Amino acid sequence: MITLENVHKSFGPKQVLRGVDLTIPKGESMVIIGGSGTGKSVALKCVLGLITPDQGRILVDGQDAARAERDAFLARFGMLFQGGALFDSLSVWQNVAFRLLRGSLKRPKAEAREIAIEKLRRVGLTPDVADLFPSELSGGMQKRVGLARAIAAEPEIIFFDEPTTGLDPIMSGVINDLIREIVVEMGATAMTITHDMTSVRAIADKVAMLHDGVIKWTGPVAQLDSSGDPHLDQFIHGRAEGPIAAVR
Image 1 (tube, rainbow, N blue to C red):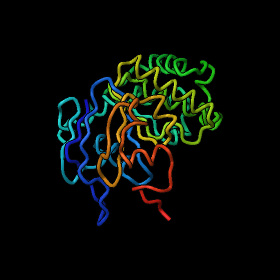
Image 2: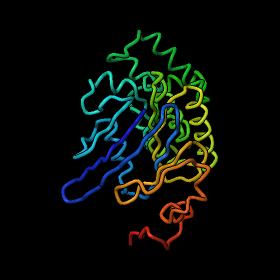
Image 3: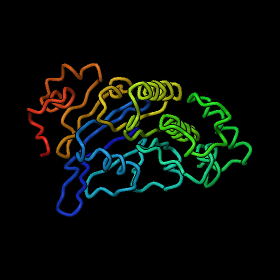
Image 4: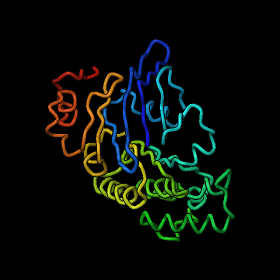
């Protein structure tokens, strides 16, 4: 479903991506791990077309992402943002139905509200939450609303950007379980970026380790602990000593 071929991206003299090659099969959940500043978010933004690579090619379902018609292309995606990214001035249901109230996916207001309430139920929130505002919700509830918004338009591909950041361990587990259930239920292709190894083990089919601008290792999540790759081994066990230098 998603293919990155020799993708490079620099910002001034700083080379962030130095030839990323990665394939995400249709219906699979791929989690990209790596330290802060290794280019995980840049890779995701390249797939979405928010950043243009300097070199290389990105294909989505066989279509060149750089040449795709933007509205139709973006309609295939859903996204759960790291900080929730809810609109403070909109009610919860309007946040969930944001894409259904405008653009090519526009639905009648009553229908959009009904879909929003259905998606809120899917993530464990009751209909009475629909008319609240984000400021009235806990961090965990905001994350659930963000997840409901990500799936509201029934996307084929869903991106998760650090889905458990800022949550306590119990709520992180709830969100991880919801993500796994929803991705399987929808048959969606998922691309997640995180450094939370609990999330990795809960939601991944396959894992890719991004370091120094390239994919150092990729394989099934079941092989994480027996990969034999020194970069991956150091990262998943949080060791200070190893080929990945700690930033001082």
